[in-house]
Length: 137
Image 1 (tube, one colour):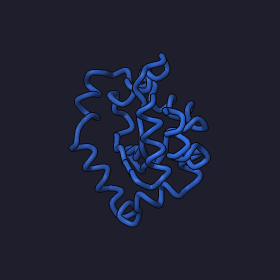
Image 2 (cartoon, one colour):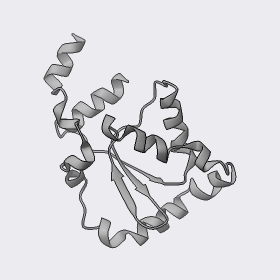
Image 3 (tube, one colour):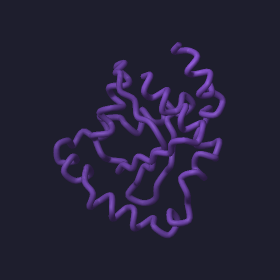
Image 4 (tube, helix red, strand yellow):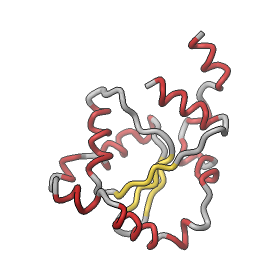
């Protein structure tokens, strides 16, 4: 948890940018979200490019979209494991989906996503790095 908080501070301060790319139907990232629901210590960080069969969505993990992310990560909807693992957890499909969105994505920059309130939610309303460090010392 403290790693994720420190990561977010570095993002807020503009020192760090991170893009995590997944296929929507991939069960592996869903396992992490499922563990979050059971109070795991692991938490996804950074911007998330979620690739669908047609199109994509860019989201950032914050409290306002928690249930939406939990719905996307729902393992029950991805129950055809392990065949889904082989099909959706691979670079071939991801490359194909990136190619199909290439025209639109090639005009986007990661900093632009970090500048959109609808994506980042309350990221910039949190503590600065100076305030964050004060909590630890």
